[in-house]
Length: 312
Image 1 (cartoon, rainbow, N blue to C red):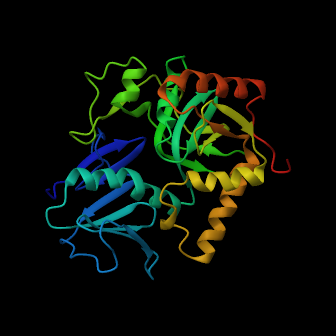
Image 2 (image 1 turned 135 degrees about the horizontal axis):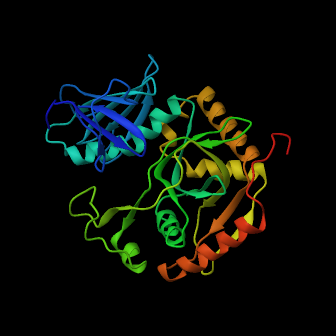
């Protein structure tokens, strides 16, 4: 690990500093970076953590602190700055992956945005978001629809502005991160696809994208569980807000105080009141990807994808 300054773009966010997330696209050096990363002295073993358990806490000066045993500490502040105290011998790839995942999520929340876990596709001049719990095949489902011609807008940490009159997806890039098993089931050639972590069978796949963002959000499909057969049901705004809470990246980072938790739930309720939401339950196996895509496609086409007014 060196202190040399590098520049990279990850899903539309420009990083500047000593470290950028794996998979970053090289960009020219610029003063208008969205996120600045600095490396500090090595961190001692964080006393507040147990073996293998990350701990989030808020400092009195407003910073959000993430401590991970054997990896180090991240000091997150202002929505645009990250200081890293790496543990002795910490893996730079692991540090970079954390920068592009939970740390980015905490930065977005500091900006007043909702960091949702999911993938986004272009539809009718806007975005259809597939969000929800980790490991349920959201990116694989997005790839299934992309093979049918749906433009890919974003994957991973989705930056959502939940404000009226129209919720928006702010940034993205036409890439999906897929496990080898899913990619092969879809018939994709991974020969030229990079692996963010060497030795781990997960690949960054490139797709055709839509018009540049931001994109108005036309609908939200929330994935929380699997079932033998796929199904999709409309959600009331109240129920949708509760489901969306389970689709957040790194929630302990930004609801650690009463005011923060109240603001978070208010933003989730605002998003649910502005956007049609469905509870999407995919099939249990890769063989049901096509059927799940059919169910979502039918639901989105049956009810016009349009934003609600706040009174609805």
